[in-house]
Image (cartoon, rainbow, N blue to C red; front, top):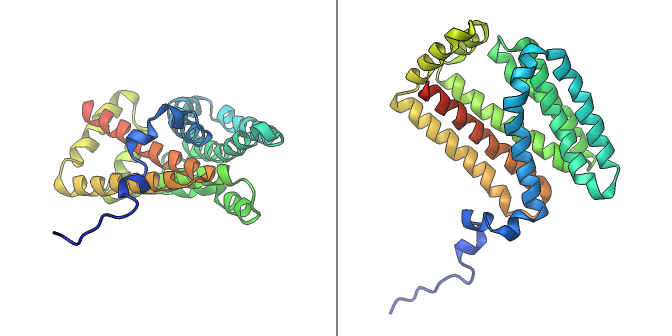
Length: 238
């Protein structure tokens, strides 16, 4: 008979499975609510802020103050402090999106530096022991943006990025089709798979933590993957 003895705590119990994450009791927990809110705060602005900032960039920029004031107001009350914290972190991503897509979208090399505009603020708050949920949300969003930009750079798509920004709307689908065709090779597929696995790993591991800030980080990272897949799928379907 084998001398192998099973571990006292199965691996399946140490890492939450996707089925466990989908249980009603967890969906009602504060951690899950923070995670869902973080996902929505990344995904929804992609479809709402993007058209707004192209036509009314100053309005989008001014809305940063609205999000920030709302976050500060909610943070001043004990029952809504965590949501205010999260909304404050979201205001830095909104600010970056307004600045870049409103005035600097023609140069992809400026994307990541502008998206990192709230980085010193987030780090400063963490050093002071404040704003952990919002800061971790911002850092998760920034990490996802950096990984996505890396994939675009790897595949030499920055010139097509510039073309999309200056092209007539009727020509955008054509450029997107060219970009999709450029990705149909084994190297791009391997890089995309590596990127996806990296985002999944970085996004799922924090779900083992009991701290809400890590769940906000996870939601921001995994929602980046969702947005990337949506854009990639739309490019291939054009």
